[in-house]
Image (cartoon, one colour):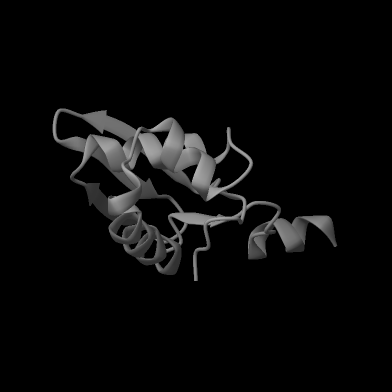
Amino acid sequence: MVMLDEPWQLSPDVALRTEPFGALAYNFRTRRLTFLKRPELVAVIAGLSAGADVREALQAASVPPVQWCAYLKALESLAAAGTIQPRGCIQPQQQEAAS
């Protein structure tokens, strides 16, 4: 579950390509393509690494607090798909390389 006070980041396996409708997120590990249909959501995702936590990313993207619940649900879906991950999380392939 994505929490407001937790640090998250874009997965290192994912590349974002900005589009007029929002962005395409491609996961090179799973080969999954995700359409991000809101530029505001793209701004939140881009801000995850820059801020201390999800709350700061939402504030930096100027998302009104009344909409945070919807954005948290979207971030939870992206986390389940491996598009975003908790900051400091080690991917399985990173663990193998470290061994």
